[in-house]
Length: 68
Image (cartoon, rainbow, N blue to C red; front, top):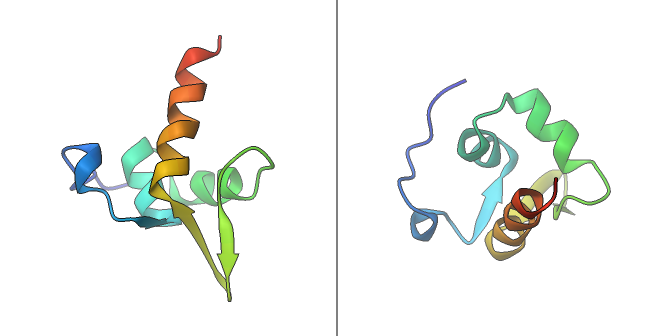
């Protein structure tokens, strides 16, 4: 697992790939793919790719931090 090259949320691309999300979250690619397939995670399939809209991703992170 490599470290994220992004230093701020503003640097994230408009659409994240699953490996991008894994780096941002500090989890494995396999874990990120499992998360991307889960019901409450904001991902969508375009062809054979799974992509994650940046704005929905940031809202999801915020919601996860607020729970618990």
